[in-house]
Length: 131
Image (cartoon, rainbow, N blue to C red):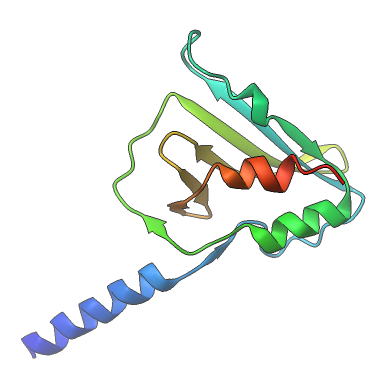
């Protein structure tokens, strides 16, 4: 009986780490939406991440982000930083939901109720690409 619980525990842990998170899951982007990214800091002397600030209002670009921002590497035991980057989803000029928060120094993003590995390259390539 004890062995069954150990095996069950291991299987549940493996399945939890194997889950993926789609950042913009269940959102059907159209022209009424926009995605806003804003850096912030609680420390006046800290980096406010202005170089990453963005507004995306093109439905095709939002759909591309939806396809690309799928995270598969959960992170445990995070430390909250003073420098963060917020992602907001806006519909009809009203906040639809707070998409998530990114801690670039740690390379993590909150998606749903979990934290995942996040490479700053996502911000540099997905958002700043000129078409």
